[in-house]
Amino acid sequence: MNTSEERLYDLSLLEEMAQGDTAFMKEIAETFVSTVPPVVEAMVEHCKIQDWKQMSSEAHNLKSNIDTLQIQSIKEDIRTIELNGKQGIDLDITPDIVARVEDILLRAIGQLKAEYKL
Image (cartoon, rainbow, N blue to C red):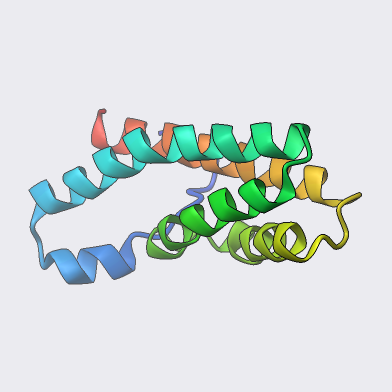
């Protein structure tokens, strides 16, 4: 991992659950790396075509991943996207929030790949 970039996630919660099981940790990382990108892509696409309800649904699907890896920088953003899409509010600022979440998640995936040699 590039040492000049701060790690975007915190694995302490997972490390506690894993109790030293490095295979479990790697499996979690692999699952995140393989399952999150298609959901992010779908959320971005739904935002572009202004399918707000579906965008909200994809954001909801990402919430647990973001919470589990404790990606604090976008914890509130993903909830805002979900709420805005569901309620049809603040849709003018939502694409910027979606872009930020996409950027952070893709960078976090890169960091996980480097850390776990995936």
